[in-house]
Image 1 (cartoon, rainbow, N blue to C red):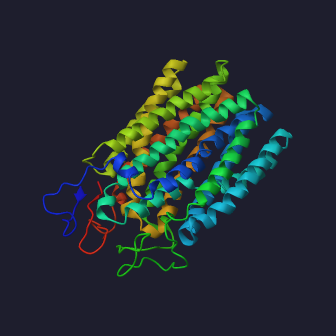
Image 2: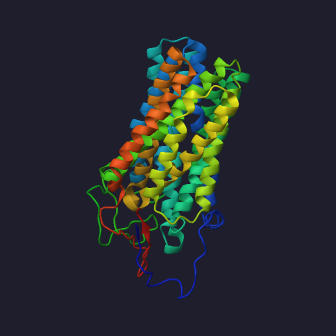
Image 3: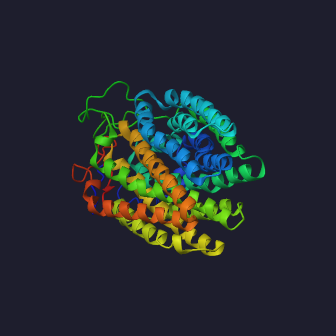
Length: 452
């Protein structure tokens, strides 16, 4: 179902607006001021989990212990990320990002030193908590900047799905580079090199991104008494909107559903990272880990590029269900594969279905959540992926220790299956409360919103 309202002002009659695409998106004034720093700042995110796993496995000799430490980091991030997002909505991204990256660099340093010193597992857990809690939420912050920038006019609003696809491609490009870089540093330089590089890049990239003040969404300040409708501002530029800020994005039913569903995506990332590492060790070729994970992430990136280039005629909710069904089907064969070429092909297929699910979920945030709570909403999804990844890393690590890499590949299958069942059962909650919600973009302007 697609709800539309005719435009009563703006383009002249008979004028066909240009088809949304990456070229038009990247020509948006001000976009490049946050895109390049944002890419640099999010690059280390894909290095963190694999860096911890490789370092702790080297110092402890156990994938199970390595997985648990990485899981503590992921759980901590999942719990604190939404709070960081809420603070960024309230006080501004820079105010949260600068102290966050400083704390993260210090925490990563402490975790690295403790692991190399042979500290007990509980000490690694203590260091893992602030490491995860301080992970900078650059991806959600960039998405919030796109929403603020594109939400200022009807013409730009048509580019929101393209922006979601572009951000997914950017995320996955980091997951192509990050794990390969971390693995190469850990296996070719020193077991701690990957984690050290993650801390240094996070600090440098985060400070550079924080310096771009001009494009950050306008903070909502201390207004936290519920949504304000008439006369409120729904966009960072102060243009009129249907709703403003509220206390928490999690109070929106659709956000809660998406947060649960994104646990399944996290289970794929976590299960693949640990199981591919264990598989590479089993065949006596540790370097194959980076290659296999890179192929998996490349599939995700290619699918993201394609999703952004397609003019979809079905809404994001149906695309989310279709993407998840394909992801579950592709993940069902991972445990039965025992050769590098076959695992590369199947990993590529799994990656191809992740991007449509991610993009569709992020696209649904714009019609479901007011502008003043979108950074928080995006961080709930990001945190949910991290939480699912944490659980998957733990489970896959224990299974790989006890039964080999093949057993670890069962984790993505279980996670995606449970998420798909949840999505199908609760799909009605992914429709905005007000039927045919239409966000005002100024006097006489309305934007069609696809909800199915």
